Length: 133
Image (cartoon, rainbow, N blue to C red; front, side, top):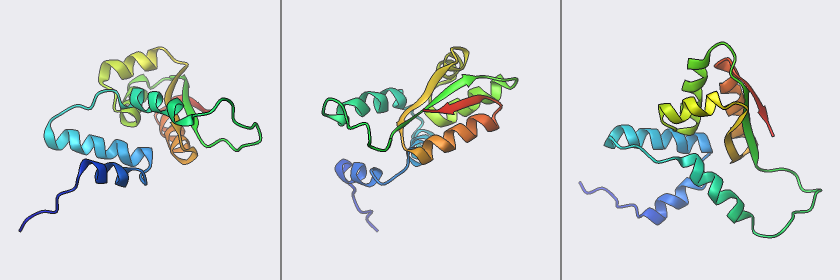
């Protein structure tokens, strides 16, 4: 029984309908399945965000569609916060620790409101203080 071949273009098109958290979970599953590590997806998303914006300045009346989740304080459970940052960003242990140590610091940028709210909730659950901008 032959499997249907999916082209990279079809795969990317399918990803457009996914939330950031769904993509992060898929990347983790791919890493686990094939024993590989994706390189800094947050940097790629941050670099792609402004380029997609295009024009100069948007009208100030437009509703905000992209949000930034900022880690403002670590709290008492630093290890849990590092774990939460790793889950949200797919950063390595050292990179996640460095991000937590540098708080206040953006954790996710240019994400939907729903994904940003989930990320803030996850960070607060881990014991951190986070805000949505």
